Image (cartoon, rainbow, N blue to C red; front, side, top):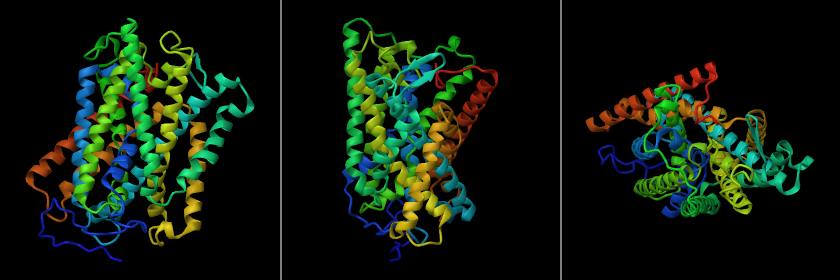
Length: 452
C-alpha cells in the first residue's frame, strides 16, 4: 500500500504522512509510553558510564550545561527530520529523506554514517559486557570480572569464550525480533535497570557523604591539569554519542498514529535521560572524585573500591549495567540491520518478509560485531572518533543540512538560522575534539576521557 500524502499547503508542523507501514509493521499499533521506552533505550547506553569522567574533565556546571544543550539540539534535529518525512513515496526512513533532498549520494552517505555509528556503539556494548564478566587491564592495573572473582580463572570465563556464550545464547535470541514494538518489554526493563544503576550510585554517594568519604567536586575545569585548553572539547563527543538515537526515529514513529505523539515521546525521553545522565555523572564524580575513571564501572571493581563499596554492591552495580546493555543491544541492532539491508538490498522486498535474508544479515552482523569486540580492547578509541565524525553527522549535521537544502520550501527563516547555528557548533567542536585526540595519540598524552 502506498502512503497517503497530505496537501503540501498544510501546516508544515503537522505530519505529512497519514499512515505508512514500515517494513511490514502495522502503523498506529504502539502507544506513546512504548515509544518513550524505545527512544529512552536508544539514548541510554554506553554513554551513561562515561558521564562521570566527562564531568571530572569539565566540572559540574559546564557538564550540566553541555548535557542540556545537546539534549535541546537533539530535540530540534528530530523535529527537523519529522518535518521532512512523507514528501516522497515509499516507507519513511532517515535514508529516504536524505535521498529526497540529496539523491542517491545523500542516502548512501547517511547509511554509511549510521552503520559506523551503530556498529561502533554495539561493539562498545560487547566490550563493556566482556569487561564486566571477564575483567580488563588498564595500564598496569588489572580489574577482575565478576565471573573470575566468583569462580577464579577458568577456560570458560575468559573474555573470548564468555562473550561468545553471551552473544549466541543471550543476545542472538533478542536480536531476532522483527518489529520494534516487540522490544518494548526489554526496553522498559533496560530503562528500569538504568534507573536502578542511578539509584545505587545515589545511595552509595549519600552513604559515603555521611561517612565523610566523598570528594569535593570541581564546578569548573582545572586547566592546570590538562595538557591543552582544547582538551575540554574531547568531552563533547562523549555527550554527542550519548544522545545519538536518530536512526531509530522513523522505525519508532512508524508504529505511532501521529507525529505529535513521536514529538512528545522524544521530549519525555530526552528529559528523562538528561536527568539520569546528570544524576549518575554528579554522584559518580562525588563518590570517586579525581580518581574517577573513564569507565565508571572500573571504579566499582572489588579491588578498586573496597573501602567505599561492599563487594556484593559492586557486583550488583556491574551486573545491572551489563544487563542494561544486553537489553539495549537488540534495539540498536535492529536499526543496524535495517540500515544495512537498505544499503545492500534496496531493490528487494521488505526484510521482514524474507526470512533467509533476515537470518543471513543477522548472523553476519553478529559475527562481525563479536570479532571486532575481541580485536578492539579500548572503547574510548571508538567513543572519541565516532562522536567526532559519524555520530555528530547523524545527530546534528544531516538534520541541519536538510533544512538548509529545503527542497520542499517549508522551512522558515528562523528554522534555517537555527539549522546553520547547529551545524557550525557541531563542526567547530568536533574538529577541535578530533584534532585534540589526534595530537594526544601522536604525543602519547592521555586525557581523562580516554582512560586513567
